[in-house]
Image (cartoon, rainbow, N blue to C red; front, side, top):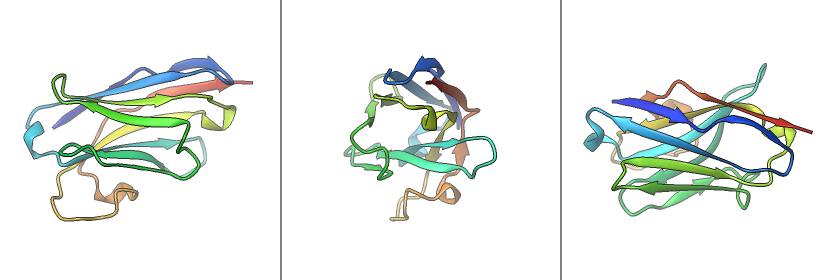
Length: 125
């Protein structure tokens, strides 16, 4: 499975961006996809996840209400809509895919099997 993330860029505080993640390869083995971010000098941080079957979602507390994760099964793409961005949202954003079928917490990066290359989001004040 390969993951291609895109949509990052430079935006002013209060602005919006939509990230996309398109998996390819043996995509039928993917159960859940997630977004994480990592700022310089900080650990990788959970942002949001979505179960591909059923569409149930999970968000980090600090991002719920501003960020929305969604999927388009026809396009085989997962999106992260980010609104009301602030400079603290500046980070490299990664999409990830999980193949585990039994329940594990989607908030840990260690449960994800495949990772994209990351897309940079920079929010200026």
